[in-house]
Amino acid sequence: MRRFFRHPTDIPICVKTATLSKEEECDMKDLSEGGLSCFLYSPIEVGMIVDINITTIDPPYYGQGKVVWVKLCDDNCKNPRYEVGIKFTDNNEMFKVRMVQQICHIEQYKLRILEEEGRELDSNAAAQEWIQLYAADFGSH
Image (cartoon, rainbow, N blue to C red; front, side, top):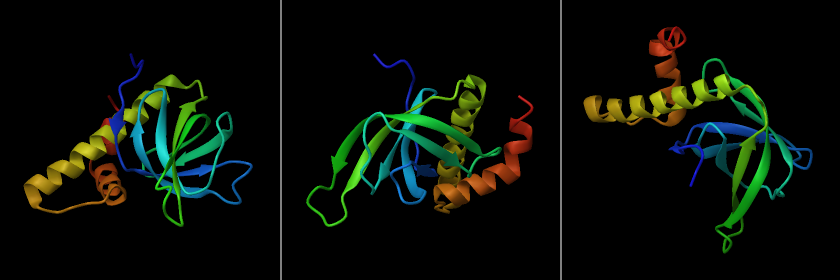
């Protein structure tokens, strides 16, 4: 049984390791208070420590995690992708909980805008709009 509930999301994040030549921007697949999964195009090994930057939330998240699993996806194409599970190593639990809550609110906002206004927002645009409209009030709860 899982310790933390996973929240699906496609919020963009950046991941950097000592073996990656540069920071790689990728989409998150899901997120929990314990960690996240994302898709990378660069191979990565279990046990590696990675820097994680999520700049589409307010305040932005800058932290570290440890790669706990890797699955090869799209192995029949020229540019394979790797689904990667990353466990947060930062002990600031309160910040992680608020980050998860904020991303869930952004995903709900994205769905509500599609339903009510017929506008299809990507996660980045939804995050920018949600932050402008609601982030100040969110911080006071």
